[in-house]
Image (cartoon, rainbow, N blue to C red; front, side, top):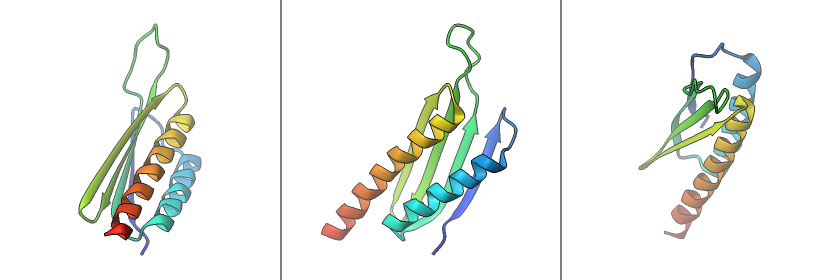
Length: 103
């Protein structure tokens, strides 16, 4: 089952390259469990602080049957924020899948 995905851009222009990366990463997550019902990825630039520089945020919300998962990652590059958020999501999904298998 291919999970439904919503990609939301806030204060950023939409990017076909980022959409492709997100789709591929979500397909990789669905290899670990088929329990993902819905996923939402929010990409935004919330911080406008001069001393920190431009910051980007990638937030991933996964609706896994019975276990909602939310991950947020900030970085100076949107691509790095997406990569780090999906690596955290992958660890969390693997952990949930292992726990589900052990039951």
